[in-house]
Image (cartoon, rainbow, N blue to C red; front, side, top):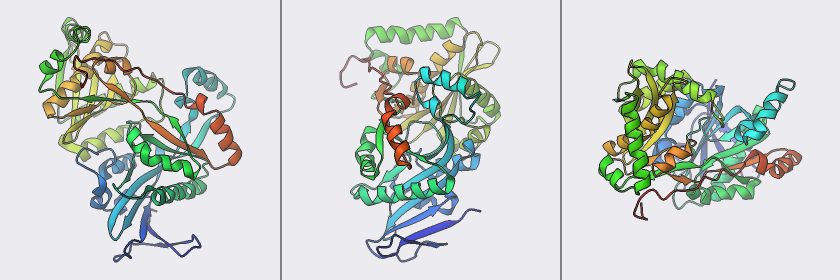
Amino acid sequence: MSTTMAREPLGESGDYVHELRRRSAPVSGQLEAIVTDDIDQIPPAMWDALLDDDDLQASHRLVRICQRSGVEDAEYRHILLSRGGRTVATATLARMDVRLELLAAPGLQRPVTAARRLFPSLLRVPVILGGLPVSFGQSCLRVAPGEDASPLLARFADEADRFAESAGAGFICFKEMSSTEAQVADGLGDLGYFRVPSLPSCHLELPFDDMKGFSDAMRSGYRRQLRHTERERQDNHLTVRRIDDWESLEDTLFELYEQVMDRAEYQMERLNAAFFRELRMAFGDQTRVLTVEGEGGDVLAFALMLHGKLRSTFLIAGIRYPAPGALAAYRSVVTETIADALRHGASALEMGQTSYGIKTRLGGQPTARYLYVRHRGPLLHRLLRASGGVLFPDHAVPPRRVFRKAEL
């Protein structure tokens, strides 16, 4: 049963008292915490107080989607820290089983997969994630500007330890921090964590009015590739559709997403059909599905878009394998994410992780992401740190100068 707990420090003992509600009149300057395993126990306005209109992936709505849909059967701890009734930091922790080799290089994945026939639990470990059990290249830890992050990170780390102990997990990982967020999250290093690289994301600035302006700004070689994609669409008789009400397509989208995941080189989790449904219901007209269809009307590829006020996100993709024209359809639908973001009026597009070749040829700039990891056992922590380069390799993605003007 879910409970909401307001944990208040009691002097220097470090003990906590568990109450069923938050104090209505907190002491000025006193750091207070709401800790709950049910996001619905925290008012959305309090949770979202630190977010702007484009920060959708840390929002109460997206956290609720993950919890309600039951992705990876994750268990949760949601933490809201406040002073004087003002939210100063939020974080979600999630407990799930992770196959560690799926985060590593392919050379390690294959022998581990073979060995798991004899040892089913090999490198399959319960993990406490500092973040959501979805891989969209964004973190879920927020700290108010101007706040001293040290005591806030210490409280998050303390709750992660408590959660790990109750869940029987040794490995803790705060995930997907950008370079800017790392300036705050590096404080976890003082709490026993060490930083390792995650898969880069891709970010595309959009100082263009439309796709013509986008194409005109490209250097000639990349413009030719863009035109090749357009000709490829015509040659394969592909049709692009933009769909705002995509309820009737949910099963098809999930089927094509599953086909991508069956072939994915790196994966931490798999979304379920309920996630697609909950996303559509929660975000409504802030989502759009772009489909590329063959002559018979079959969906060969899709992109699911999430639109903020000034920033759009290419959230989920799917491809129908091995249908003729499917890869051409995927190249076309990635291009359409840019057109859709421009049509929305976005000034930037987050293109996500993986498929770096096509994304960087369209101007996407690789942007670093970091994980902060530790093991609660001292020996295993030392082994984890020593093997970090194998388990967490640096996936360097070379940037391309796609546009003629250096500032683009």
